[in-house]
Image (cartoon, rainbow, N blue to C red; front, side, top):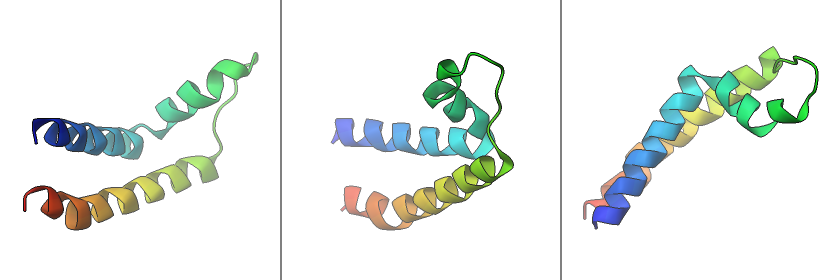
Length: 69
């Protein structure tokens, strides 16, 4: 049970990081491949934030209550 709570906390933390710092995820995944200083597009940032909010809501209202039953 302790492992599941740890992973739930980690999942929530990553989702919140993606909501507030979407450029960090882009740099970790794609930024290191680009030689020139490149930035993520506004559409990428918007979609990252929207998808992170949706995933966080689904996790909090669907999967988290299952962990505590």
